[in-house]
Length: 169
Image 1 (cartoon, rainbow, N blue to C red):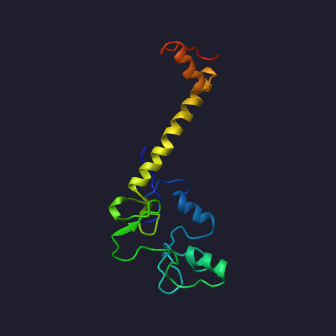
Image 2: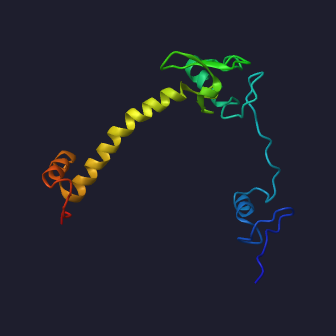
Image 3: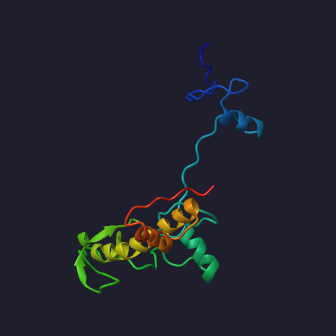
């Protein structure tokens, strides 16, 4: 049996009820004609701001400013941004100015780069990794055999480097 399509001109969605797709059927049940012109995306009403509208005619940044300060303020963001044409950045950990390619990318940040250089991130990762591995191994031994890592190492020494453990039942 062939799939029935929505009867609204230009709509290629599958039929759900009364010859209409889900979207057009819902429009009809809400009292609107089944075909409406799509809304034009609205932008913030602050001059110079082209961000999408959120509420009250303003973008999210200007709505927050309106709530906090009582006025929407200027179009530009107050957050720190990289200087146009900048090619270097100072690491927040080692305080050395390095080129942008020495920093990992992060599109959430204003200049598009992480605040620590790659070397500092690697040092932090190594400092975290070893204790995390030991903690994980300790939890595994606790759940499987009912002993902690120190007891496990003691048993290995007593048995001459070989271990014979039975799972806890």
